Amino acid sequence: MDRETFLFGAATSAYQIEGATQEDGRGPSIWDAFARRPGAIRDGSSGEPACQHYRLWREDLAWMRWLGLTAYRFSVAWPRILPEGKGRINPKGLAFYDRLVDGLLEAGITPFLTLYHWDLPLALEERGGWRSRETAFAFAEYAALVGKAFKDRVPFFATLNEPWCSAFLGHLTGEHAPGLRNPEAALRAAHHLLLAHGLGVEALRGAGAKRVGIVLNFTWVEGEDAEAVDRADRYHNRFFLDPLLGRGYPESPFTPSPQVPIYPRDLERIAQPLDFLGVNYYTRARVAPGEGVYPVRYLPPEKPTTAMGWEVYPEGLYLLLKRLARETPWPLYVTENGAAYPDLWAGEEVVEDPERVAYLEAHLEAALRARAEGAPLQGYFVWSLLDNFEWAHGYTKRFGLLYVDFPTQRRIPKRSAFWYRERLRGGA
Image (cartoon, rainbow, N blue to C red):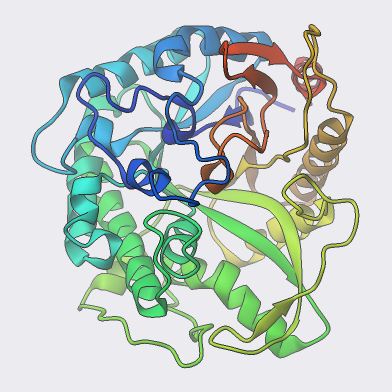
């Protein structure tokens, strides 16, 4: 396979690895505030200090070179660039990403930049957050700023990462920041996130960005009851995909469904042409009829499962890529795929993680099989480069190719890192 055109990478996000949450002018984010709530984070932790990537990025870049990555997907911290969400620019924040991007290019690694990976500036949340239409326009201002700064050095810009999580985990189930449990708030947030994407695409293109796309998380849904499968597919997949394709919103998965104010031209803006679709995939869901506002019941996962309790189902990635190849017009990138396992380190030079090796091998093969059968797959990114702050799970779940001993910040390669390195050396 041509490594010049197919990207083999690893992915991270700013809040999960950077730390330095109060350094060099960074403003607070909704996750800083959410982590202070008693019981919100499993181990009572936060994104401070995370992996101290803000300080140790050169060491992490050296590990990327050792792995042989041809691309690195990272996110920019909105509150590090615009501490109040809009208006005043923090030059030290921009300077950090300047150094990172230049370092990647010097190492021959393609930067794949995500503008929003869930760390909304707290100042915007205090004015309504994603429930407010104004946040979408603030995002466009932020997108224009970052696009102008990096248009000549970054070939890939993704507007949002997994807006499903921001809208539904953040505003419906309360598992993520800002921690609300309100169907109307969830649907308002979903629409404003997609509007922000559309406005962000306009802003990035206006700033001269070359390739612009979005990253969605998908769940392969199966079950014997067609109505339950359709409702779960609308909830997990189609609610965000269909508007991007110009189909408008599918029928709401909620009963009854709150009404969301959609202004003229909103759907047109959301459905602008894209240069790629990022595909995040981890597992499948088996469903049956249920009760309540979202009448779907999830069946227990079949074995084997990961430390997250997610079923290991590589066939779902193959089927998903084949489906997206039929239904969408865009080049595809698997922008996240990986697994958490209870990795243990007792001073060894290599952390053994045979389950992760098996997971990644099976999923990469599934992705490449879909590509061989015509899916327009252009890249594959492992989640994640590093063990990190895993949102509501804190530091209790490890996804990294590199084990992080958080008290010392030492990075130790796992067997999966050696496996990936050898695969990339052999052209995968």
